[in-house]
Image (cartoon, rainbow over all chains, first blue to last red; front, top):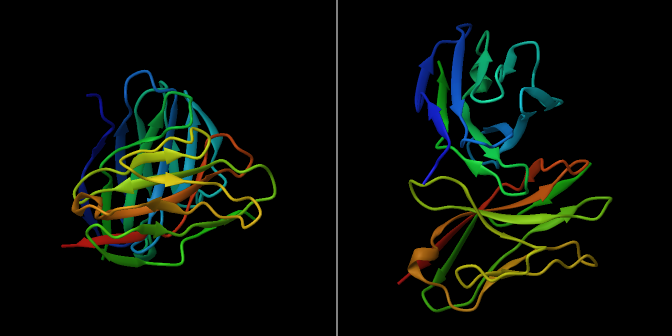
Length: 112
Length: 110
């Protein structure tokens, strides 16, 4: 069964460093999402792609966060510089343009 | 602004007892609501969608627009129902963007 892949699964970094997360959606899924989940809260949408285009990045802190999906397949989320408050689980999800989103296992980021 | 509220962080019930996980929402348009579930060491996955009106794993949820609620119910809890449950609202502006609640941890005790 096809699944969304994410790497790394865990990342520890020091504040002011740069970090990058990678997501490979289910093949054929046109829509890709990045969510941030702070401990004790629900996932919060950061950015939504339709193929290679950004549909919504209104909640993405653009001074330090960037996201790309150059060929409309896999995607990278970058944080530079990382801050203590960025410690969270970063979830990627994909959808075949319907309502159901399929989530990856997440990347747990710890900023020291 | 739209919002999803799940008032209980933890709900503990005995096996065989009824379960009701509460979800309230605020949304100015016609809402589209979902329940997602995360079992231990597994990924977040869709449990059910209000439009489909299906019963999945014995769970049902009815959209009550008057009370702006979408509570998740099951008549008899099973041990395997223990998980984290998130209520989610499509929006803002539709577009298949989900606004999640804070989640309720359901613990089914033997």
